[in-house]
Length: 370
Image 1 (tube, rainbow, N blue to C red):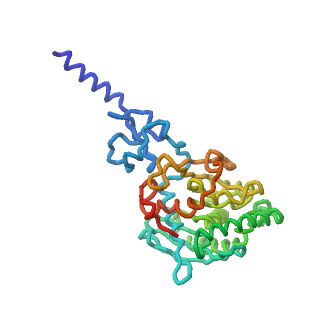
Image 2: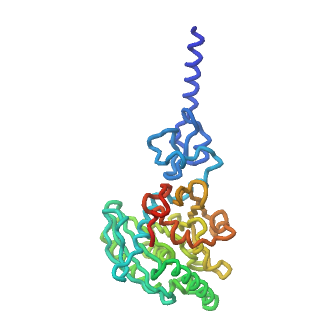
Image 3: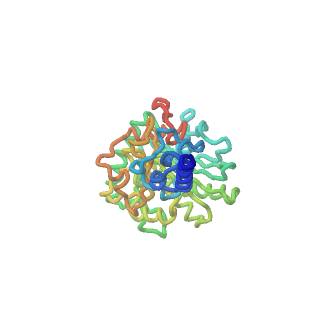
């Protein structure tokens, strides 16, 4: 009788001492290789955190959790996270709005504490749809200054993007002859494509206005963001800000569907100025990040955050992502695709995360449209 009672007790003691505290694991593979009280620990790609089975703190639903090491995405290796990406996405989306034909800001998804301070209409001389919008403001709750850009917008967006791609290709040919546009006098080798460089003087003026605005909010971090052409303008602006601030502020650059903006020297300079705080988000097979072509000397700066389709991708909402940090373009992310040819991903997929966030399913027909 004593033996029959002691065996279950002994088994329980051994089981409990062998069980792991899931929250101590910081990578998907270590998490899913470990056993909780009953089942393997679960990795939630939404908060990049390891949870015990049945944990009330787990924001992922059962279908989103990962409990098999073979299903793990690349380990989280940079300062990017879903919260940062989602915040930037809302600011980028909000730049796409017009009222009586004039660009303005859509406040629908902006935080209640965010105040738009200034908007700037930018002209891109080479563009058939030449008006885009830049704005900056402040979130006094998060202690963050935001600078956002949108791409060009006139008529049907799909027609616009197709036209923009043609302009990109033509601009690339021009750059073969001219060598691109030099942005900073002390850096003769650092150049961007003419398509973006023509807007550089306006971006420099906007940078000065933003710097004056920042003086009112010492210690606030800075988020610079934009979609498509707006991503290229955000890239130039964030780099220019860091040149002026010399590391005195925490600056994050998060772009969506950004085309290749400059030459290899420009890419290297951005990586140098925005160490581990520059992120290019790419949705699946989005075509735009792959133009202009590398063969004519256009290169991306890092880090690419790639949300491929498949796996955890409920309702077309971007979910699991891979982080590629190679000094040049990394074939482990979207540059390794045989045929990245989707305009749908460029003009639609990013915005499917707007209503509820990354990894939160929504119906495709409820995705906000531009």
